[in-house]
Length: 348
Image 1: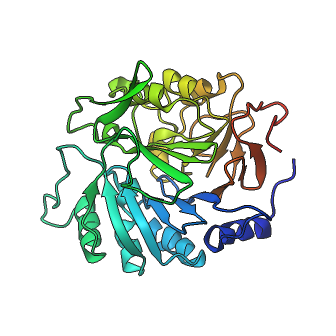
Image 2: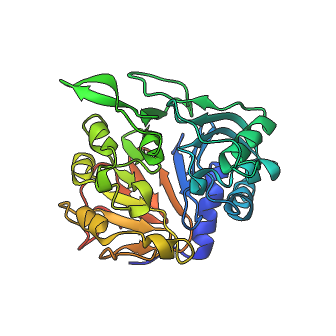
Image 3: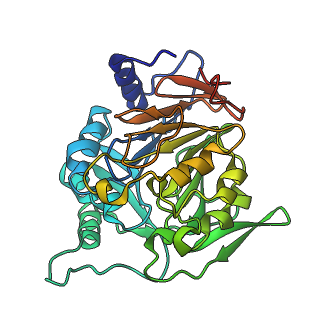
């Protein structure tokens, strides 16, 4: 299988900002998973409305070294929305660096829930959460809490063809009750930050994508948030794996309900991952047990398990969809079609 050249990928990333599309295409959606090592940062951009949503900003240092320069290279100096999926440092640590680099933000969104981290450290300095709040204030955007809503919700409006559905946030979640949507809440302790993560389903035409921060799936006695939202989410095309392939997430019930054709894994080599050893083999094995098994794209190899046939990219992972088909770093797939690892199926 021929992989795209560096020049081809650079054009793809430039097209994200410039709105370059195939002849006849209009209102395409681009999703760019930044290579931020052991952390998360993903840009969602509608080429028709030209509205943007950045979900997380990586750990301290990556906002300055990776995310801000990449946004500027793409011609994006102002974000319509920044969303903190939750308050772990590898998700919000780079946000203040974006603001310092001159990236403007119209709206800052975050998880709901009653519990918030301390603004100051025991030594009286700003905590990572405190720096995030200070940066939001400097950007003139006081953070607003997202909450799951049944039906149309314009809290995140990227345009007419791109629907953003908040399926979990701060312990609240959308559940399916006899086929109808209902809002429920799961009791979560103040030491379960990951379980409070914001989870979104992004729909563009027939294309469906799930992202959920570090949302937990019941592993290691964490709250089973994945299984609670799974019946409402249903079948998707692309799944961004929760919590970097940890055993706390990607539960069997969750992935069997979502049945993704493609999975994206943001993970790092070395550093702090020498402690966590992610992704975990048991997690990858659950994914591989799906029939057919999804293709897996990883930003890096990581320090844990191996997934047969995984694409280890060592770079950003870019998705482009017109709502009928989609590409991932140049690999072309059909929306809502089953694919096989053996022959690539409907991806080529």
